[in-house]
Amino acid sequence: MNRNFPVLLTVSILFGLGLGVYEFALPYFLDSQGISVAQMGLIYAAGALLVFVVRIYAGHLSDRLGRKTLYGGAVLLNAVVSAATPAATVLWFQTVLKSARDAGAMVFDSMYQLALHDDSRAKYLDRMAKTRGLQYLAEALGTFATGLLLARDAYTGSFRLSSVLLFIGFLIFLVGYRPHDNAAPSGRHQSLRAVFALDLPRPLVILAVFAFIFTVGLSISHCFVIQLFWLRQFGASKPAIGVILMLHRLTLGIPMLFVGWMVKKHLKQFFIVFVILEGLVLAVSGLIPHFLPAAIVWLTHDLFGAGLWVPIQSTLIQRYAREESRGRDVSKVHATASLGWIFGPLIAGAIFERWYGAPFVLSGTIVILSALILFRLPHEDA
Image (cartoon, rainbow, N blue to C red; front, side, top):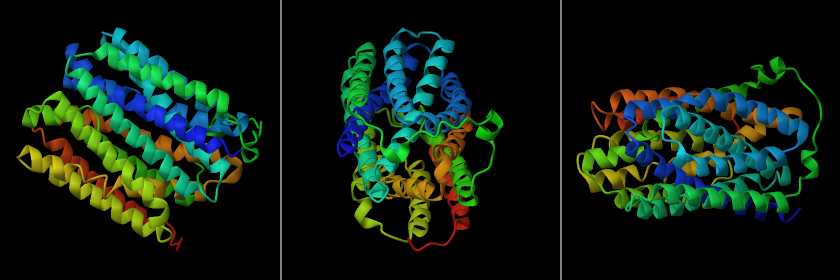
């Protein structure tokens, strides 16, 4: 099973490259098709309920059937969506494709965490942090490359590049990954009522509530407005915005490479502090009137925030998940978080045109409030 981790790491890097290309290109492509900011809010929000349902059920299926099928299917779905996106020039088709992409990406997110935990529980925090960190670094590279492509309005080429990278990742995973004995499928059938029942252990309920409130806040500033803010507020060029968003992913990915040796205990305390720091920086960055200071401040929100607390959150979720329903428990927490995407983009679409900095200020405020929920977690010293 020693080769599983390199395979998972390689696929995550390719997934990050493809995702970085797609996510950066999409708002500009929608804008080029005459789709308004308010309509973009609907496109980004529409799939959130689908993501919730699909992610929970995928977690349940992974407990019954194993992780490999769900993992590979999620990567392949994203490859298909990227290939089809340039042909989708009407609102309803883009909404369907974006919803399918979001569902696939969220299933991928759950499955790689479960696969890493199945493969080595003792090394989970370090491996998860390194895998996600390198994935974000790959997203940074994909974002930067797309910024250069879009300087020539090369939308079709960008989406094709994303699709090819994802399809290569799918093939590598299909050939190289071997399920671990710890993840042997249970084959046990459960009713839909049992699958979707709110029966999580109390610590996971707390983590789910936090994740939902946090996602509402974060998605206000991290949807389509993340590109449009720099364009409308400061008149930045697409290559310049590409550099900002590349650095955004770098500041998210680099800290994760070191979390494994930085954080050994007091997970709860570190978690709370890093979330609050992230919220403060987001709120302040929306108030700064000049481009360079605003960009510098904004780029530190993950460096001192999610780049450090995301692996801690994932470790705590795995710690409190029940062995017999690990896939379902983990997926329920993340799926509850995804419901925040129903509200964040809609709020952003409603307030952005009135004040370009409003999504960042409101986003940071809600993120800070979400940290208060974490004080309810059990007191542990590890």
